[in-house]
Amino acid sequence: MLEGIIRESISKANTKALRNDGYLIANIYGKGVANIHCAFKMNDFIKTLKTKTTLIFPVKVGSQTLEVVVQEYQKDPVSSNIVHVDLLLAQKGIVSKYKVPVKISGIPVGLKNKGVLLLSKKRITVESAPENLPASYDIDVSKLDVGDSVLIRDLAETSKVKIIENPSVAVVGVIKAK
Image (cartoon, rainbow, N blue to C red; front, side, top):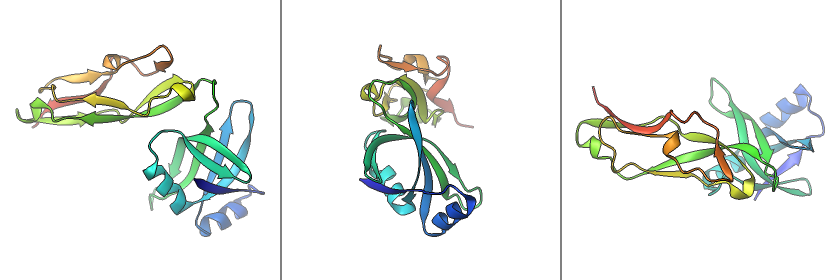
């Protein structure tokens, strides 16, 4: 489990000192809950993100254990290091917006016909309670030929998970190579 420290001060000097010590600055927030200003060790945070199997993962800040989802992160434009992350509390029964990853499987028929597989959307925005949240959208692309695509409206939508994207947007497709 990822462990972090609560930041006593949110001043610029304190933030800079924490970053120099190898910490990643984070904010944890949710509906009806006071914001928690915290910091995590950068390497521990990256390891946790790479090894997690679902969108929701536990963190321990101070004496609290919280279930959170990465909502947004900011990268340094020069070094590409993560400098700040916003974590949304996954509160049971409360509907929020989440970005669910897209996973593709299979080899498209169109690749043999001089086509190229193009993944247009890596994440799909959905509105759901955390207990109904899918881990990912798995799309089988083995039947796609050149010019074929899978649109948002082709994805399975349940009564508890609502897709917020434009239904006519392509998620994945096979285009003709130049």
